[in-house]
Amino acid sequence: MFQFEDYTQSADYVKGRLHGFSPAYLLILGSGLGVLAEHVQDPIYISYSDIPHFRTSTAPSHAGRFVCGVLEDKPVMVMQGRTHMYEGYTAEETAYPVRVAKLLGAHTLIVTNATGGINLEYKVGDLVALNDFIRFSFPNPLMGKNISEFGPRFKDMTHVFDRDYLKLIKEIAGEQGINLREGVYFYASGPQYETQAEIRAFRLLGADVVGMSTVPECICAAHAGMRILGISLVTNMAAGVLDKPLTEEEVFKEAQSAQDRFARLLLAFLRRA
Image (cartoon, rainbow, N blue to C red; front, side):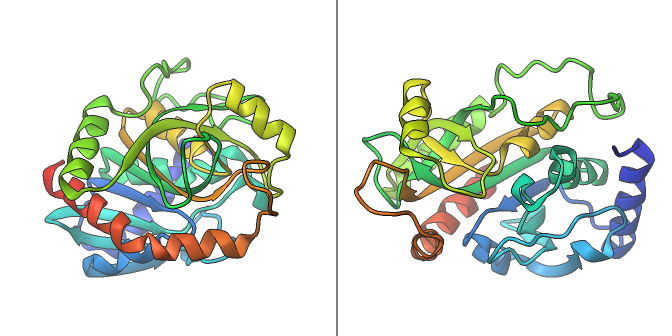
C-alpha cells in the first residue's frame, strides 16, 4: 500500500524532468492507440522505469513511458501504455500514475482503450464514448487507508464521466462524420477473454463493451476530483457474438486501422475543451 509521500516522491522526480512544464491533461492510450503521442510538440520522454515507485508495463504494444508536451495548445502528459491487474499488479499500482499526474497539475483524465463489443448493434471499428462502468468484486484502488490529500473516504460515483465532455465529444464526432456511440464499459480482469456465458450475463446487466483496464484509473481520478472523458474502440466482438475465436492480433490490427480517426477526434476535443 502506498503512502502520500510515495506519490509526492514520484511527482517530484517527474517535475524535475519537466523543467517548469505543468500538464493540465493526462491522456492514457490503450492497446494500439499510442499514435497520438507522436503529435506532441516539444516532447519530453520519461520512462516509467526511471520514476520512483512506478510500475512498468509488460503488455504488448505498450511503450511504457510518459510523453509530455503540447497538443492543440494544451499542456498534456500522455501515457504510452498502462499497467493492468492481469500483469500481477494491484489496483492501486495500476492507478498510481493518475494520482501522480494530479499532483503535477492535471485536472482532466482522457482515457482510451481497446474493447470487445457486447452490444449487438455495435460493430468492429466503432468508437464508444463511455457514460458509465460496471465493476464487481475486483480489488478497488481506494481500499485500505484513505489518502485524504486526494479525496474523501467515501466518494460519490454517480457521474464518473463528465457530462459536459460527453456532450462535446458527441458534437465533434457529428461534425466530423464519425459514428460515435455512447455506452457502458464492463471491467473484466483478464488476461483471458470472457466466456460466451459471461458475455450474455454482461449484456443483460446493461454493458455495451468489455475490457481489462480503465476502471481503476477512473476510480482514482474521480476520487481526486478530476474530470474524465472515456473513449473505447471496439477492436473485436466479444465471445459468442461472432462464430470465431478471439485473438490478440485482431485487436492490434483494428486499433491500427482506426488510429487516424481516433486521433482526429481527440485532437479536436482538446482544441475545444
